[in-house]
Amino acid sequence: MPPLHPLRRAAALALSLALVLPSPGGTAEGSAAVPPPVPVPAPAPTDTSKQPVPVSAEPAPTATPAAGVGVRGLWVDAFGPGLKTSAQVRRMVDDAAKMGINTLFVQAIRRSDCLCRRSSLPMVTDADLQPGFDPLEAVIKLAKPRGIRVIAWASVTGVANAAVPNSNPAHISRTHGPNMGAQSWYSRRPDGTYLEGSDAWLDVGIPAAADYITAGVVSLVKNYAVDGVQLDRIRYPDGGVWGYDPKVIARFNAETGASGLPAAADPAWLDWKRDQVTALVRRIALEVKGVRSNLWVTAATITYLQPPRAGDLVSFRRTRTYNDVLQDWPTWMHDGLIDLNVLMNYKRDGVADQAAWFDGWNTFAATMRPRADGGQAELAVGTALYLNSPAVIASQAARAVNSGLGWVGYSYRTPNVEVYGGKATTAQGLDVIRALLTAPGAALNVPARWTANPPTTRGLLGRVTGAPVLGNRVVEALQGGEVVARSLTDGSGYYGFAALPAGSTEIRVSGQRWTDTIPARGVVRLPDLLVRDLQPVPALPPAKAAPVVAPAQP
Image (tube, rainbow, N blue to C red; front, side, top):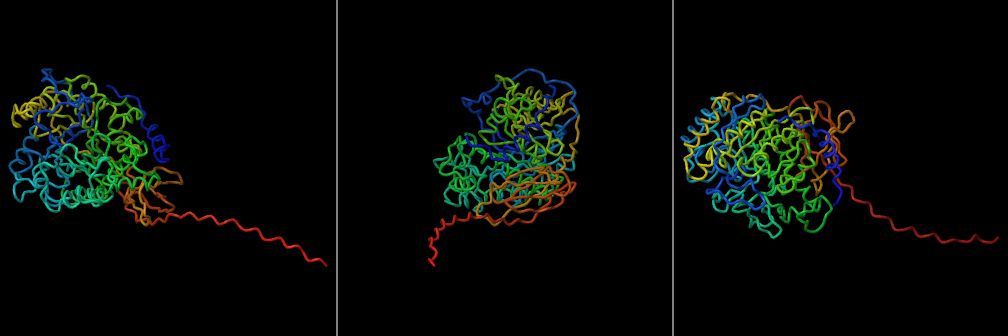
């Protein structure tokens, strides 16, 4: 196993020391961007979190919710009724308000297209979408006057579905699709295949693709009065054997000195791909905060199978979250790259050990809240409404809220397992869970607005230019002559920090230096730094010995 990159080694040590804390008192992923199919799929052999659960008659806990993170949210996806007409939006907002929801996570970016009319991405093509209608704008106009925040939910790497392709000629499935050769942006397996089921994914290791999706997310906050953005599918696909587009392999080899095709389990290859995911989170977060520093940057994160031990990053690095889909969300929290982590803690209380897994992931994540700057990241628990009975839904929401955490349900369209299985309508399902969630002592019993501001963002965003290879360069931030943070450049040369102390800060990267002042709040944009990699001087040929000339005899 090759040694860790010096930055990774130092960062791992610092993060471990900062985050190994006492335990606080006391899966199926089902990504929020993926519509749950009907009927319930059979479980994968190695993941019992996908097994069906019997309807439970167990009553929900009635303890008074503890003070803590104030978000009480609902995901509203783009795959069924809820966002496609003005009438649907009016009803959805009204339903949310009656339930005591204070935050709507509204799907804006679905598959590199938008349920909105003012973004850099093409519009969603959907026969059920009301002509000329702007779903995101409509939700904002109706929800915010009622005290409900609106978070624009973006499926970051979802690019296309083969069964229902976007028909817009400008969509990247047509301009950078699988048959576009060197211009393709799709993530691939070693044999060149690119579909996971019917879905295709953008490869975050392709700089142009990362630039494109970053611009799409930033265009939302520039053009809509949203309260923040949520990054979903901010990872590689399940299975681990992805990232084998020839451009990505060439870049990995150029940046690391490797050669040939990396093995799927090569630690250096996995580290590098994981860094690309984190780099994209960093870039989007800092670009968004550069537009409006008071916006919430959130992520919907993976919690597969058994949880790590509380406060134990070593055990987290043995999970599928870290090694399969290559998410390092504890680092995102620690480094201030996300303000709110919404765990996709999609467990079924009636199946094997999943109730304990649910609570264990919540406990572990709570120990990851401390940030590098002394602040705290916020944390909410996302639960799978569509996998559970109403009683289990209420129980999981109460356990989250009573632990001082926020709660978000997936999803408005499939609010319980009966609706998911086609045995009840969405309206019927909503009525049932509303009654339980708003009952005395339940999680949503006391309606309350979520008015908190995100943790302070103090940081900078910069870029290096001028060299053929711009990625994987170590960047250091120094204050008072001491290194206070380290990072790596991405494939386009971007770097940045989001949790720096305020004050004069020097940046060092590839022999270049720049000094600027970090404000009390906000993101400083540094000028591009031109780097020139020194070429090794070829060795001189050995000098020839001068001939020995004997002195002349007198």
